Structures are given as structure tokens and as C-alpha cells.
Amino acid sequence: MKQMKQNSGGFTLIEIMVTLLVLSIGVSAMAVMQVRAIKSNQNAFSRSDANFIAISFLEEFKRLPFDDAGLTAGNNLDAGKAPAGGNPNPAAADNQFNAAGFPALANLFQIDGTTIIDGAGRRYTLFWNVDKTPVNFGGVTYTPFCTIRLFVYWNTLLGPNSISITTIKFNNLEA
Image 1 (spheres, one colour):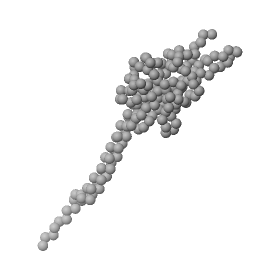
Image 2 (image 1 turned 45 degrees about the vertical axis):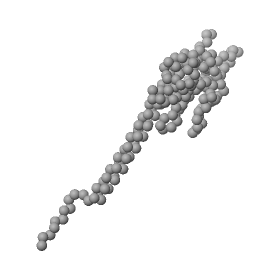
Image 3 (image 1 turned 60 degrees about the vertical axis):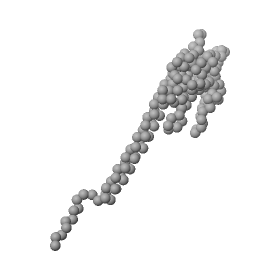
Image 4 (image 1 turned 90 degrees about the horizontal axis):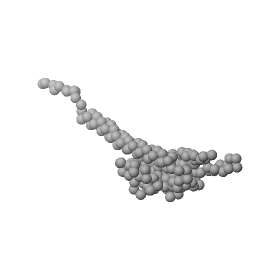
């Protein structure tokens, strides 16, 4: 009687199934990483746009006269700022974006009421607070500078975002 040869070459069905399971877990993890990378990339683009908008406003603040209505002082540089985990309250701020007050910016950006819209359709809310603390020097009281804090808020796929920039504008008085 002839004995049958045992063929031990090749893979068993269990080995193939385990290999496919490990491969599918790896591919799924890569897909999740790719989606997260796309969202983070969009978040970075929106942050760049917000910085561009903020810098444009800072340039406009330089151009404005020191006593301009857009530089009306209030009581608190953080008025309107969103509390941790909350929403901003632009109505509490000293000044809110209004296209009529900034015609140069109205020509530069797409405007919808009091919000700016970028090329991707993201909406940016802007408001700022001003502090004009007078000083007394030699018996004369004057305001040599004001502090401006600009807030920009917007939403992305990763949730709400914001930046705030503080700058100083000098009152170029002639002595």
C-alpha cells in the first residue's frame, strides 16, 4: 500500500484570516489618520486666513485717526471674549466690525453683515476693545497711546477657534 505524501507547504485558512485581520486594522488606522490630517490641514488654512484678516485690521487701525469712532475706548480689554468652552459676546465689546467703517477692508473681503467670509465659506466674527488711559505729565493730562485688543472667532470641522492680538497705537501729537 502506498502512503500519501503530506504536503505541508502553503498557508492554512486560519493564517490567511489572521493576516487579513491585521492588514485591515492597519488600513483602517491609516484611513482615520488621513481624515484627521485633512481636518487639521483645513484648520491650519482657516487659522492662516484669520491671521491675514487680523493683520489687515491692525493695518487699518494704524491708518485711523486717534480720535476715530472705531477706536472708542471702553472699560475692559477682554469684554466680549468667550469664556472657556463658551461663545463670544461681540455685543459686550467696545467695537464690532461694520463694513461701513472700514471701506478699504469691505473691498478686500467678502462681507455678510458684521461677518467676513473667506474663499472656503468660513465666517469670521471680529470685535475689538480699546483702552485709552490718560497720563499726567508736567501738569498736563493727555493720552499718548491706546491699547487695542482684536478678537477673531470662527468655526472649523475641529470646533470653534479664535485668535486675539493686542497692539498699541500712538497719538502723534505735536508739542
